[in-house]
Image (cartoon, rainbow, N blue to C red):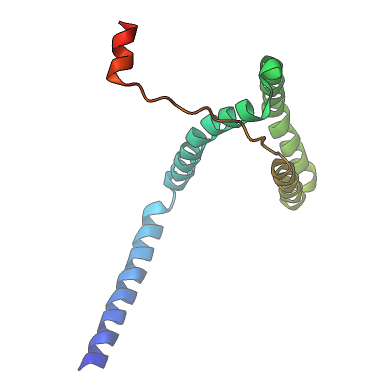
Length: 140
């Protein structure tokens, strides 16, 4: 009977899922595997972040002021890398996790708004001339 066969598969899947969850819970209890998984995903995301950040800076900042802009960006990043966790820890310690996460959410929203305000100018693209064998012979 097709209907009974379908219920049997659902029972099998349900049993397998429940056994898998209990095995996974037992396997992950008292381990640092979830922490390593988060660190791995974070590292993977950061590997795409830096090239994108550098390319965006090159598009936004005029060539004449690029060196100055990179100096400011690097200095502010170093400052924020030191002061940010300290301020977050103080906020978390004195007012608890709720206010700390509210402040973090508000700051992320502000960053998204300012990121959305960034406009990129259209840069003229020069046409590429495809070299021909005759052109290469003239160079030699």
